[in-house]
Length: 92
Image 1 (cartoon, helix red, strand yellow):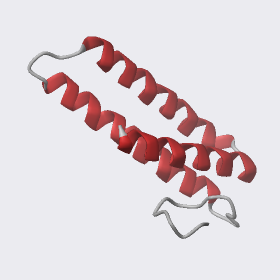
Image 2: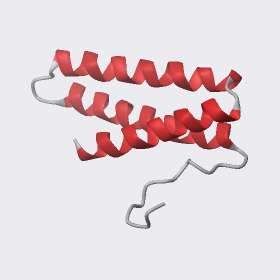
Image 3: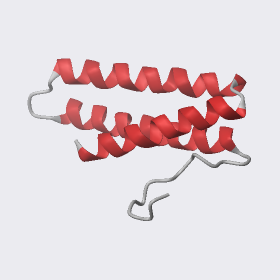
């Protein structure tokens, strides 16, 4: 970890990978949920954006379900991917 970021470092997980991965995927799902609600409440809802957000949420939920049978290596990979995704989503 470089010490310059507040993002979690999942590269050296020694245990609990599945729970940490589940937490970060759940955070991404929450981001999508809040964006969907905001988009629906807009004065002129952007249906295309809403559908894109819903597709992103569904993909995250599918990966979250995959964690139920993932080994430690797969859980760490999912956690790292979703930590990066969350970072990018928060920038947009």
